[in-house]
Image (cartoon, rainbow over all chains, first blue to last red; front, side, top):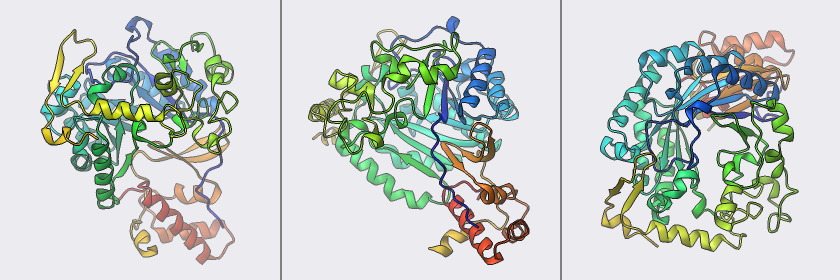
Length: 384
Length: 95
């Protein structure tokens, strides 16, 4: 008898990111949603989401991530989550939990929610609420985390890290463990959408990044029996690019609140791409035939150094949006790759921006108010 | 190392919260789903996991599998223990 765990290769998509709304009570400066958000009036209704979920399952999708914005801002969240569960999808709610009380969480469990991914901004309320620009958010999140675990739902704590909170990774992992999470995701800010606008205030120094990675490796064995810790090297300090999305149009799709289907969350930053909508086309046709999905699928579109690179089917040239943002060409190699001629400039940019002593956030939708966070002298001195 | 892994497997194993078996009709395959994870579970693996209900002991699971498959009981026991140790290491079994 032989019981292989390693699965066969799945050519069909595995995951669907369902952005139920762009509305959000928080104003995190690292928000990677676009500068121009979609309106509430244009949001897909629950019946359309239900149809999209059925089509996703037929296409091979197994995981659905209900996201936003804040998905709890939708009054029909229960109906939408229930529809996802009813067609057999593993249903994950990505939330700040603002807008979720004990009753609503219990009902989400009843309709079949499998997993909650809850974001934290920092270890203490003062700093966390300043980052989210929402008084009381942190305390509510701690309460929600405990409720989720008490309900027997699986919990992942997600923390986006950046210059103001990266030195707290050890304490953040400890906090996730205390809250009863089964998994903690330490995710470096990704500089798209609103986050790009705040990059100068968010970029950590290399010394901070290095220290955080060492700290996590040190504590990892201590939590081996109760916590999965996922930490990824940030692109700006990487030597090789990540296979963004597991390769363009290979593993997952992203549906915006109004129904536009994107190969990745930030794909709309690439000019000239034509996105199809679930209002006009079935998901299967969009996945197979829409111009945006065909644009960078496989390796045919590549230029050098990717085209002849031995790793081209491993990293698929990295991130197209980052290639556009830094190299000015979506077909170029991701400048996170040291083979890119733009790599030294990207690293220099990170080093320069991270050396700013003060952190000034520009908050979305909060007028011109700018929040300044003082950074201790010791931290800023680490600038390389 | 083997002992350490084996010691993490509870006497009566069950899947961790947020982990469940699912039949994927599109791929005509059983899969184990968890947060950010998909693991294909072919025939015997699926038979083992279906029995991880928190009531059956590992020994009972091995006995039942021995009734289903013609292999030696010791071979089946090794396979069951290996699979459960691997899942425990991935935090996919309840502690």
